[in-house]
Length: 442
RNA sequence: GCCGACAUAGCUUAGUUGGUGGAGCGGUGGACUGUUAAUCCACAGGUCGCAGGUUCGAGUCCUGCUGUCGGCGCCA
Image (tube, rainbow, N blue to C red; front, side, top):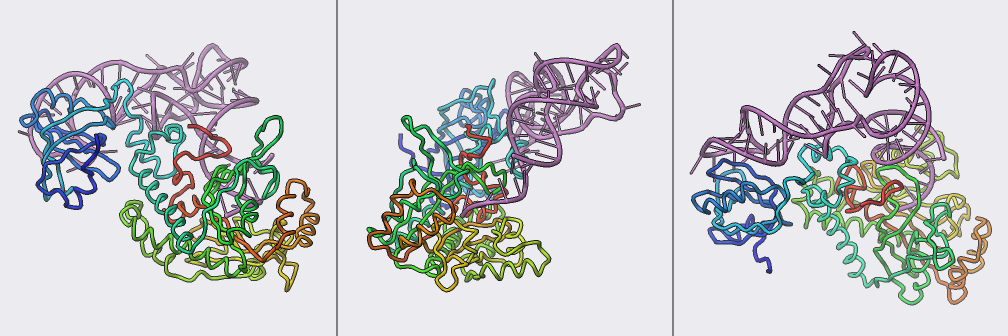
């Protein structure tokens, strides 16, 4: 039953003039009662197959003529190089229908529904996500996504980072408590994790360099093009590292991702209409660094109403990123704007040693990270000043009591990076089954 | 939590001042030997989201509900 021939390989010229057996799904059909054109799809591409009544016989011809889009079939034929627009065609001599589509329930995703999808996904397509996955646009997105995940893994592994897993059921919050998903846990309450970070810090003295790609969950009622309630979070933690050193890893992994995408997914980026020079700039350029105070000055200079100490929301990020054509870092936020685990700057404890990486083209924040508070005194001071209860974090505080060292890390929103590099209109377009505050199905 | 839209056939939609709901795609039947979203002819397919109200008469006006979408705040 193994599959030996792939449409993508035929387009590479590997089988010119040869007999092949293709397995796939009907993408489009057209023709007359003597000659029928069937565009076959598999995971590697599409190819036009020519079926002549004279070549296959009446029975096969009538069968294939009445087969609907997305029926699965096996066909045998000769690979023919043509000067028609497709370049390659299959002259079919044998056909077998494997999974027929019932005419009472034709494949529901029509051209009109797909055209509509170009400007964002309709309710209908979201309801039929399980079928939408096999369309060319979604397939392309999933291939790009795979390359991005692969690049992140190899980037860290090539630098001797250890992949490490944290629990998804947790007792305490990382960010503010209001965005936790509460789940019943044998008569107690547990929460879905918002981040791998606190548990990674516990392993930091063991592994020193560690990373993960794992789902994080946030019960934000956000309705924007860059939020999901379940998103894929690439996080790293490294011992003996300063904020600047951690930023180098962040810049490194993002640039590696852009570079690898150009190498592995040029065809897919072109299919999406992406400007390859733009991606090359993301791969090759140094990412500028700006302190929070400078950003506030720039915004105030533009007449934006912002007070020192306020976090920079998306509207302000957008104004800042408008002047950049590559991602850029913002560092040294006021400590009052950031959670307790951020380490105050020893040179000026009004600030914390942190960074955000903002993507251009309006995609906004893709990385948040920095140095962590690492002494017991400092973390207790930060927790208390924030008014956070100590109990759920006892294990986290305890790690500071046995050889605390300077360390830090960052979290990268993988789906956001996918959306940005693919040029997607919405983060939903780059994840197979998106979860937001109003949708958990299909 | 807040603000703003939308809901008509399987899909995408038109529907004027309130007066018997149309089309394209998809489906079915037929024609056609090189089509590119093939073309041509015919047919089937509708509780106009749900519940009230106004009216002689509501897809259209009013109220409520439900669902969805877009955006804000928060974040990755």
